[in-house]
Each structure stands twice: as C-alpha cells, then as structure tokens.
Length: 240
Image (cartoon, rainbow, N blue to C red):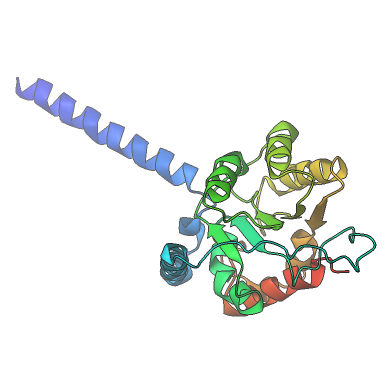
C-alpha cells in the first residue's frame, strides 16, 4: 500500500511539473519572458494600464465618435479620412498595452482594446464586441502578431469584417529574438497587398534600430520606447 502511495505521489509530481513546463512554453513571449530584473516592473505597468482602460470603458461617454458627415461644399471624399476628424480604435496585445498611455496623450479619444497574450485569431471576436458596443471607429489600428503565427485567411476574415469603408493600419511584429516575426510579417504584408484600405506600419524596421527602447526581453517597450512607439505610429498615419 505504501509503495502504491509513493508511486501515485511521484506520478502527480511529474504531472504537475509537466503542466508547469507547458504553461511556461505557452507564455514564452508574454510578459513572463522578460528577465526577473524588469519582469515585475513590466507586469505592474501592464496591469495598471489595463485597469485604466477598463475604467475608461466603463464611462458612459466613452465611445468611438462618428466621422463628421461630408458637407455640401466637398466635391469628393478624400481617399483616406483625416485622422484628426475620424475616430480611432486599436486592437492590440501587451506591446500596445504598455504604450497605451503614450498613445492616449497623442489621441485622447482613441478607443484601445489591448490584452496580454492576444493573438490575431482572437481579433475578430474582439472587433465584433467593439462593434456591438459602438466603439469600432472609422480608423482601426491592429497591433497583433507577436504572440503567434496566423494564416492569410484568418487575417482576411478580420479585414472583411471591418469592411472596405474603414482605414486600417496593421503594425507589424518585432522582437529581438522573436521566432515568428518573419512569417507573421510576411502574412501581414500579403493581407495588406490584397486590400487597398490596409496599410502596414513597419515597426520591425524602426524597432530594430533602437535596442535601448526595449525591456530586456527585446519585445516590450520601456518608458522611452513607449513614447517613441506612439510617435512612430502617429507619423505613419495617413492624413489628407
């Protein structure tokens, strides 16, 4: 009986270790990938930012504003709406979540829905929820790709749902040692090439030039990087 009990305990210990290893593997490129020296700081930042966004969402007046209707004096609508007059909605992961306060300083009325470990495959569901709440703006920024690969069909379903009347920007993925970066960014560009209203913001090129903008994981942005990231996005938004 004692021998059987010891065997059972050994099994459960092994099973527990296996679950732990699986959990670590799944979150390899999430906030716990950062070394211990700055992981806690990063985690606290993300938690605080998420609370602030949830607080804003709970405010009754917090909703994506409609683009002002064209006046009779206008002879033709511009190809891309003025970013200052249109509403902005962001669907992102923890990279954008970290930079959310910096982006809000530039676009205070932007609706930001960013979550830790979010993948592209989850974005369609997020877009539908935002639409139902009246929070899906005329300009949509997709900041996804860091947490896993996806295929063109998945990306196209998201674009189809957002529709041809919205201006869409897709920020490509960057990580110093991010294995999926090449494949993800190729897919993003394929989707953009197939849709005239989708524009790629090449964060991978800009981020790679500035290693000092990142936490030690080479993916998430420090305070300086968050500000630079937000300004880089603003610089790449098309206005007419």
